[in-house]
Length: 182
Image (cartoon, rainbow, N blue to C red; front, side, top):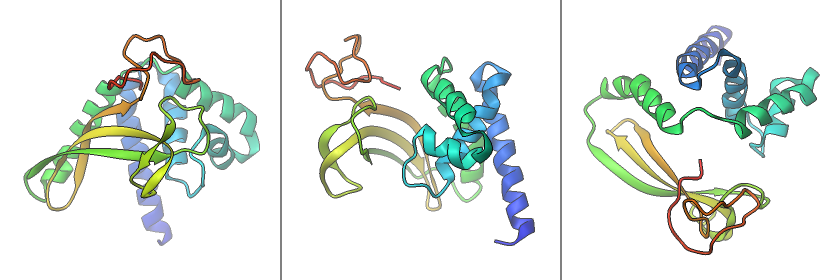
């Protein structure tokens, strides 16, 4: 990618994240969200806050790590409102290439190396094609022939029932219901 294309992409990315930041409820959350989203796009093996801090702020890793932990762990903003804002911003661009042709319900597995994230358990992971530690989410997406857009997302947290008082350490009630753990 040449310099002009890269600068244009960076400007569009920053504008997009800034437009999403209205959902966050407080201006202090905008920079951590930008850094978190940038970290998700970076070519790093683990998408956890420590490696993200190292690539987004190499001179201030400890401070950025703390900032990202606070952003992720103390997120009082609504994930439903965030998905709605993403839809508001992205759906018109998708529809420029044609109308929505399908609603897709899909389960998606996210391989995990440890067991500290909510919902991580040994289960079938489609990305790996086998059983391993992963999280599984069910998504609802709108699609046409060019693109798709997730509009709803639910983490499948085996053993963590709604209102069970379960924590990220994997404590739960033992029932197998879908529960909102975002």
